[in-house]
Each structure stands twice: as C-alpha cells, then as structure tokens.
Length: 150
Image (cartoon, rainbow, N blue to C red; front, side, top):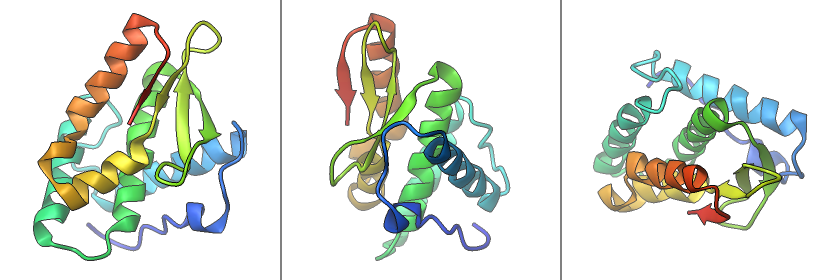
C-alpha cells in the first residue's frame, strides 16, 4: 500500500440520510483506497472482492494495532462495488456501522453494513470473509426481500 488514505470522513461528520454529498465522499474514499494499492485487481467488479479479502487478510496477519483507515477504505470499496451493481442510497445506521447502503427501494429494502464487516475481517480473520458476505447481500437482493446484511 502506498500513501496516506485519509479515510477520516466518519470522524469528521456523522452520516446524513441519503445525501449526494455523502455518496460522493464514499466514492472518493473507495477510489483512493483502490489507488493506494495501485489498482492491484481492484476494478470495482464483484470478483475484485476476492482480492480485497486477500488485502484485508494481509493486514490481519500483520497484527496491525490500528487499521481503522484500511477498514474504512475497504468498506467504502465494498459499498462502491454494490452501488455500481445495484444502485442505492446511504443512510445513517448505528455505532458499529454508521452508514448503510440501502438498495431495492421502494419494492424492498436490503441494507449492506460493510464497515463492521471489514473491521471484523481485519481483527477476527477469515470468519468475516468478504466475498461470502457480499454473496449474502446479492442473494437478498435477488430474492427481493427486506434484509440487513451485517
């Protein structure tokens, strides 16, 4: 990884309901995250989540004490993959996941909570496997049922 990711947008302000400004900031963070890894297979396609998971596994194995910026950048990357595939809007959620991406409205609502998942992938390891997590989200969207994927 190269450079400072500057992922502090959640430390600067709390998410507001569905603003274009928040979506723009989330996309910018995702783009900086991918650029920090020189692309390295991060093309914002669903398959690139395998590479993202490998990156997070490397951070986990390194034993890094403070990897919050990496977790936030990775979460924004997951959000951007989902947004490019399914659209959606961002909403404020809870302390563990201050932002959720909601897709499917108005027919159904599937919320994707990526922040807690990427933090868990770094701290807990493979039990928070990102491609498996995303596949659960894809299945919920395909089923067109209300769900929150955490």
